[in-house]
Structure formats: C-alpha cells, structure tokens
Image (tube, rainbow over all chains, first blue to last red; front, side, top):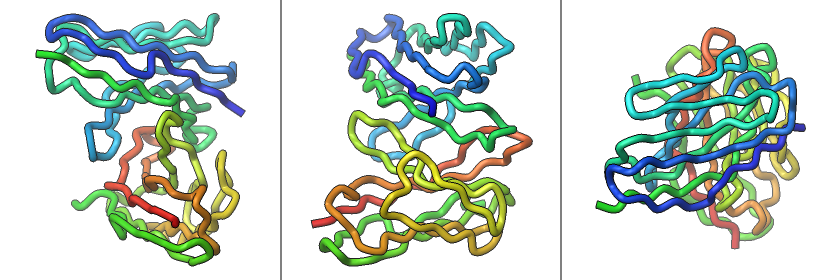
Amino acid sequence: GENVEQHPSTLSVQEGDSAVIKCTYSDSASNYFPWYKQELGKRPQLIIDIRSNVGEKKDQRIAVTLNKTAKHFSLHITETQPEDSAVYFCAASRGKAAGNKLTFGGGTRVLVKP
Amino acid sequence: NAGVTQTPKFQVLKTGQSMTLQCAQDMNHNSMYWYRQDPGMGLRLIYYSASEGTTDKGEVPNGYNVSRLNKREFSLRLESAAPSQTSVYFCASSEVPKNEKLFFGSGTQLSVL
C-alpha cells in the first residue's frame, strides 16, 4: 500500500517568514495530493490540493508543488501569521476512481511566533 | 446544514467493553470514512464505504466493524475494546466521484483503560 512520509514533525517560524513542509509518497499510481490543516481541538479541514497533471498550485499565501518523478510534494506558506499555527497533514490517494482513500503523513506542528 | 455529526464526543471504556460510534452526514454524499488519529501517525483509515450497503477495509481494520445503515449513517463498532484502541476517531464524508474533498466530523476522543 501507499506510504507517506512528512517532514519536519515540528516547525517554528517568526511571523512574516515562510514555512515549508515536505512529503514523499511511495505509490506511483497516486494522483491526488491534498493538504489538511487542523487547529488545536478542531477537525481537519482541506486547505489546498493538487493533482498529478499539475506541477504547482497557488491560493493566496499558500502554494503546493509536486515532483512526480521524485515522488515528493511540498506545502509553502508565505508571510506567515499567528492564525497559521496548526498541525498540517499531507496525504495521497489514487483519486476518485479508487474512492479517494487517503493515506496521511504523520503531520507537522507549525508554530508562528509573533 | 450540520455537515458531519459524530457522537459521542468523549468516551471512557474498560478493556473488553463494547461500544458503537455514530456518524451521520446531511450532504447527500455517497462516500463515508472512519479514521483514527494517534500522535505522530497522522490519520489512518479504518474502514470506508463507497455507498449504502458497501464497506471496505482500510489500513487498520482489526478490532473494528462498521455498518452503512443508509446513505446518511455510517457507524463504527468496537466489539471488545483494547487499550491500543485509545485514540481520537474521525468520521468523514465526500462527494466522490464529483469531488475528493473530505468533510470531517468533530471527532470522538476514546480512552480504553
């Protein structure tokens, strides 16, 4: 089955700096890569996703890049703000055709210091 | 719309006891999922249901059973709880095949003593 590794496990940044989280996956048939944000005590929520036919996607201060050859993808948060403090999870799946059964990484706890 | 509703929010069990976690969604989604969340391990899929009447094992199904009672409801049962099942459990649904986005419930914090 799929295996998703996520690094780092914790990340502390100064407000205004950038944060980068990296994930690798093992299943070459995976074609859907979402990122979920989980604030303390809350449920995970989708913040951005990318499909294997796209190399990069941006949404305001958040961007995701995908390297299919190397089987890794990354989340970039620019101009970090205190409200970006949360745990971020990457995930991978074979997409809609396979029921979108996601395999998640272990999570990255991001702390943005004011 | 309430979205995905899970009950209970908290539960403490003794080893060997049984219980059922309830989940319901009001978004008319076909697909529903049960995940468990443990520190440092992300979320791991326990069971999945593509539609009413169908269920499929995920990564960690041992010790669990599920029922997709109808399109709205997907329950998770622990027949004989073990301390290793202490975890936070999340139910989720999605509009697959239209959209892969998962909508999560608020979670159930389960402790097995």
